[in-house]
Length: 386
Image (cartoon, rainbow, N blue to C red; front, side):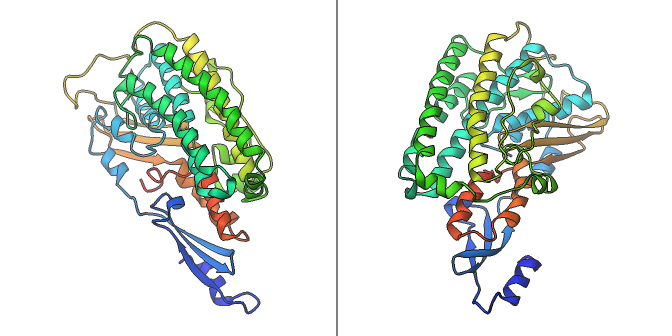
């Protein structure tokens, strides 16, 4: 147990009895692999010890044993809910080291799939979050099923594009592996049109629901100062009033060509983080339409196909690339020794950094609020226990 948490237990408060309760690692709202040691006084949480490490898979060491051709499809398995984003971070880092050029069409294709992936990821977040908070919402399971319906429509697009629905291998050093098949763009437009309409339905179901408002407003408040001190990113820091988005702060893959807003809320609670993501749905759809309308002609890769997995070599050097994932900033740091595989590699996972906020904001809330707060953080443990 964390020393501070143990100190709280030993000292006690007003002579009242304290109880230590395990939430997880098999608790469904703990994503199965997260353990929270809660120190309780009655139903009020007075201290939290967040325990991770149940899903460690040595991703960074694995990246040093696989070639630059092999690893992009493995990078998908870090944040497996937003696999396109993880792949993009890796290939962008290698391209910085090797100074690879990426054709304009490939850059637009990368933006297109990244924003579709953000919509699919937010669908999974919203559906599971409402399911976690339970029947008190009067429709938690309904929202979950609706969100899965929309997410499946996007996975249909990914399957038509790459042949896979979860882990894609779409990105490669110097461009993309696949181009759009015939009829794909029209199907994508129809899909985002339907999803945009249904976002309003989600909002009507939840924002007119007194139970939902009680469970989210004023719960898990993160101040602007705390968000910056802990190093939050993504919807969490934007929900606390900080207008920071990697796509704007350091545009990559032609994001400077696209017109979109960075949603910001100031309340810093679960509801503010919800509102940021709901606005991000619409902004991502706007970017998808722009990418489809302005998709340049030309090649999708700056290098020819390879005949062996060790054929691509990167000059000596090092580079760091960061992208704006569905949960925040995802970064990849690569050191090359001139061979066919990285000498060293390091991931910066948004979920790992964002989890650090939990011990700061959970104490003082009820046990039931822990579920709502943790769901609003939206961690994916593939990039926590790398």
